[in-house]
Length: 106
Image (cartoon, rainbow, N blue to C red):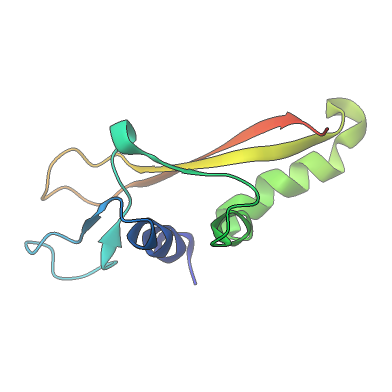
């Protein structure tokens, strides 16, 4: 499943975001929320959302970068994943954004 689908699934299960507008007849059934109500996903969340988002194509890259450059960056980890939709109008194309917060490994 793609990043968009997983993000939509997590948002729907956490009861944030919204169903796809009726004016748009294709695409994902559920949209992530806007920035002011963004979806924050933390390690250890009981629904497994953190692992699912980290394993998406968009999540694996930064994780792999931290592993490959451990000597230069130090021991780092993803501390949270923030997901939001940046589309401003109902008819505008759905634009998912995903921010991975990086912190020191405890």
